[in-house]
Structure formats: structure tokens, C-alpha cells
Amino acid sequence: MTLHCAFIGFGKSTTRYHLPYVLNRKDSWHVAHIYRRRAKPEEQSPQYSHIHFTSDLDEVLNDPQVKLVVVCTHADSHFDYAKRALEAGKNVLVEKPFTPTIAEAKELFALAKSKGLTVTPYQNRRFDSCFLTAKKAIESGKLGDIVEIESHFDYYRPVAETQPGLPQDGSFYGLGVHTMDQIISLFGRPDHVAYDIRSLRNKANPDDTFEAQLFYGDLKAIVKTSHLVKIDYPKFIVHGTRGSFIKYGIDQQETSLKANIMPGEPGFAADDSVGVLEYVKADGTTAKEELKPEVGDYGRVYDALYETLTTGAPNYVKESDVLTNLEILERAFEQASPATITLAK
Image (cartoon, rainbow, N blue to C red; front, side, top):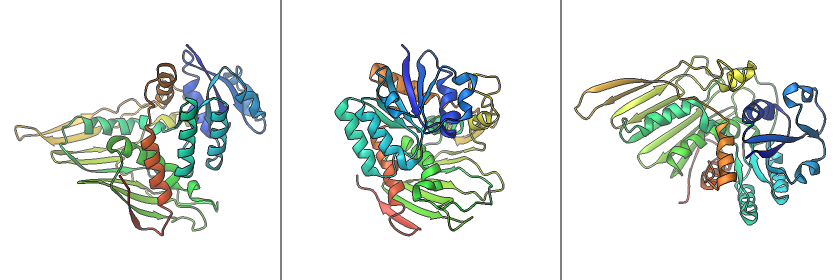
């Protein structure tokens, strides 16, 4: 069975992070409509020839065949578009951040439940190759009890044009929403969170540098981003009671997409950066292994949603994970940084 979907928004998010994967899944998904406020030359591209482009949102929402609406707009409009789609009886997938506030997220979840629908964020980086490789190392049990994990999402982009904005326009909402979701998907809701959130390149702009420390009993998870890292730093470092894991190199899907290499084509997301696992075995000897990178695939979001909508399978992102992530994001800006908060259980 093929499900019809529609997009709200036709910017980089839609064309780079969604359409290449959906269009590669013709047996399960058909893109029926794309709503955008004004026409763009890119609409004439051959791969979009079957898609109906419109500046009338009602055309999308009134189509009874559309089962899923994907919201790919600026964060400040996510709530309004998602709510309108739910009210029209559509299941909804929302780009990150899901909503700027936890109150808005709770309202969307309640509305979806009242109508028997699904609403969920696009947490595609749960399917990053580098994260899946680190997850495999952790779940192997070879590291023993995990005591520390450090996750980096760094760049070297020293110049930042003046672009004032709100907290949701900064790096913590923009990138932290992904890297914290990865941690939450592994370990759940932390007990405490410590923040250090700064704007280093241009003080007129929202934050571009952050460190969040999530505490889970004896485990500490460190999530960091900087735009001033010139030398490659490990993407993941994991320490346990019996060993350690280290992984350099990030998922290559975005690199391929920027080079116009599409999912399913030769060389897409090619990655030869291995992870290294070193641990003490039961007999007391030390073992060292190389872990080949797991295959990353953002299209697995759509595979999971297809299963949810056709079989009733649980959503690939739990509602509690979404709310925990948004609470950590929102509360980060309630006081000056550095700061520490405690999360209620």
C-alpha cells in the first residue's frame, strides 16, 4: 500500500533532508502536494514532475488521500501549521525543533490523541552512521556499565554575519535538539542538566557554542558544539567500567546530498572511518576491535512512520523523549549560563 504525503515548505530542509529519501521509497510513499508561499524555479526539476505545487494550503489539507503532512518551515511556524494539519485530520511529521516550547508540544500531542492521529518530530539523526556505530558499541555490553559518553557536533566557521534571533534560532536548539535526542534515546530522562551556552563569533547573534551535561546517576553524558574547532575531534567517546570506545568522523549522508549524490546511487554516504573498541575480557586480557560504520539512512524515519500508520506500531520517537528534550532546551534560557537544573521524575 502506498501512502500519500504532502509538504508544507519547499526550502533546503525539504529538498535536501526529506525528498531524496521519500522519492526513493515509491512502494510506500507518494508525494502528492507541496505547499509554498511563492513559486520557485526548482519546481521544474524532472524529479518533481508528478508533484502538485500550490500556494493554497487548503488544497493540501482538503485532499482526502493525504495521510501525512510534513512541516518543513521556520521553527516559529511549526506549531501553527502542525495544529492546522491535525485539525484537518492529517498525521503530521514536524522538522526540528518540534516546537519552541514544551507547552505547545503538549497541546499538539493532546490534539493528535483526541483525533486518533500521530504527530512526531523529524529526529533523523537517530539514523546517523556515527551514532548507530556508537550505539552498537554500547549495546554490545563489552564496555561494561557506561559511566561517560561525550558527543561532538563541531565546525570551523569562524565568521558569522550578524543575524539576530530568538533562542530557537541558535545552535542549542538547532543542533543540540539532535545530539541530545540521541542521548535521550539511549538513556532516557536525566536527573540533572548543566549548561554552558554562549555566542562567541558574533555577540549580536543567538548562541553558536554550547556544552550540556546530562547526569544519570553514575553516568554523565556530555553534548558539545562549537564553530571554532579547527582540528578534527572525536565524534563520540564512550567510557565504561570494562573499556572505552572512540569514533572519529561524522555521517556522510549530508556530504553526499550536497554533492548531488542521491540515496540508492553508488557511493552515497560512503564512509571508511572505523570506530575503535578496547575492553577487558572476562579472562582479564585486553581486546581491541575495529567497528565498521553502521549504515546511516534518514529514510528510516519514513519507514518507521509507514509502519506506525499502517500497522499501529509504536512511534519511533516516544512522546516522553520529545518532551524531555524540549524541556531541556527551553529551560536552558530561563537563567544566565552557566547553570544547572533538576528535572522532575
